[in-house]
Structure formats: structure tokens, C-alpha cells
Image (tube, rainbow, N blue to C red):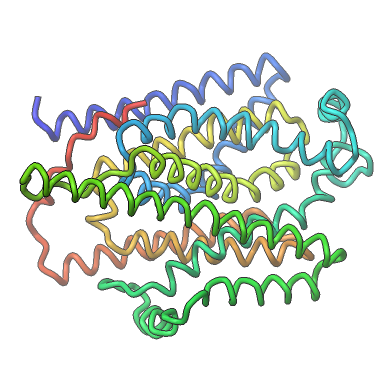
Length: 378
């Protein structure tokens, strides 16, 4: 079996698993709440995939740097965290803290009827906590975007904007300064409780700096050890060292926090469709989160980010837009359709720009076969 056939077969298998799990989730939803529950589960799954396409692109960029072991953990343990942690346990935890309820009381409240507009209901309590959640997630995503924006790169997409900002980005800690200023402005202008928003936003900044900083520190250490090993063994040039050990752990942790930040808007927005936590877990988690991870694996296997160089740019601009939307949503409701469409439009524009760039460069040859990364199988 040729490498191309293997890669195609493997990619088909990945999406086949996602499809099977999605069908199973819809069937479970049907037995749980009838045809209406099944329909809502499908709608939530589609919404999650639409909102998180930029997440898949960024995840793929990070996943390429991880060793086989940590790639597998992200695709197995990570999906459990995404489904049960962020889509089920996290909302229960937030409601429990907001309403000062114990775990059992929070679960009982979640299973009761009521939407986000009815005071005292599960959806209402989660909606009340939205400013705090949006501030945390907005700051985390904003710093991710700003660190990328202020970094010098050989290839730029919106060159008229990216190149000047990259030069300005040489100023130390500029990302944190800009993020801090924006946090203060939004907290003081749109938040009903500025202190709560400021506290949550600062926590988001600290979380990003800690996870990203430790990941980079241990990754550099691992690469240094790899270089020393090559010198002692007189080895020739090798492939770029993959993050293992502590470096792999912190990249894994970074991806999980990143996924959580992306999922905030989806979890909150889901309550505009249904307050039922079981349907939300089935739709956002089993269907949406699994398809996003399958898409991440597909992007890595096919070498899509290398073939279409502006995709990463479009994803980061979409992250920046999502961060701003989260901050705006502290005081004003932003329709989920707007959130999803902005990301899709930016990534589609980046994809089309990549096609134009490839044609102008006279890239008429077949792209090199990507490495058969069977370690990414689910």
C-alpha cells in the first residue's frame, strides 16, 4: 500500500469514527428525549464545529510539535476532558459556585426545566456568570493572538498591517500591556461588576503566561538535550525534535486550556438553544469536540498548513476576533451566528489567498507526500 493510499485510508478512518460516534450520540439523544432532543443535539454539534474550525487549525500547529505519546493523549484523554470536563462538569461547577450550591443540588437544578431568561434556573445562573467566563477566555485568546501578531515572520498575509506590528512587537511585554489596557477599558465601560471582570481577566492572563511560559521553557530544554545527544553520538541532522516529557505535558496542558477558551462561547451559546446539560454534552462534546479533533488530525496528516501557508494567519485573526467578541459580550449579547461566521470568513479568505499565492508562484507540481503519521490514529 502506497503512502498516499495509507494517508487517505487513515484520514477516512478518522472521520468515520467521528461520524459513527455522532450517530450514536444522536441515537442516545433520541432515546433520552425523543426526536426533538435528537434534532437539538445535531444542531449543537454543527454549531460547535462551525465555531471551532479556527481552533482546529491552531491545534494542528501545536500538535505537530508534540511527540507521538502526547499526540495520542491529546486525542484520547483530551477528548474525555473536552466532553465531560468542559461541556458537562464546567457548567455545573460554575452554576454551583454562582448559586452557592453543592454538586448534587447543581445537578438537580440542571435537570429541571427553564431557560437562560428564567431567574433561578440552571441556564440563568450560567448566564449570570458569563461576564467572568468571557473575561477569562477573552484574555487567554487575546494574548495568544497578540503574541502571534507581534512576532516577526518571513511570510505575512495582511502585510500592510502585520509587518509594522511585528516591528512594534520588539518592545518587551507589549502583548501583556495591550491586553491589560483592553481588559481595564472593557471592565470599566461595559461590565456591571468591574471588579469581578478584572479579577477573571487577570486570572486569564496569568494562566496564559504560566502555561505558555512553562511549555516554552521545557521545550527549549528538551531541544537542548537532543542537540547534546547528537553531538555525543556524532549523529547527523535529524528531524525537528518533538516535545516530550515535561515539555510535552505543558504543550498538552496548553492545548486543553486553549480548547477550553474556545469552548466558552459555545457552552454559553448552547443555552440559547437548550438548557439540558445532557443534550449539550452530546452535541457540543461527542459530536462537536470529536469532529474538531478529527479535523486537527487531518490537517496534520495532510500537511495542509504547509501547503496553504495563510491558513494559520486566518486562524489567528479569527482568534483575535473571537477574543474581542468575548470582551464585547461582557456587556452586550453577540449572536452565535456572528461569532461563527467571522471565523469561517477569515479562514476561507486565508485559504483563497493561499491558493492565489500558490498559483502566482507557479506551483503546478504535485505537493510532496506528507509523512504517514499513523501515530495520530484515534
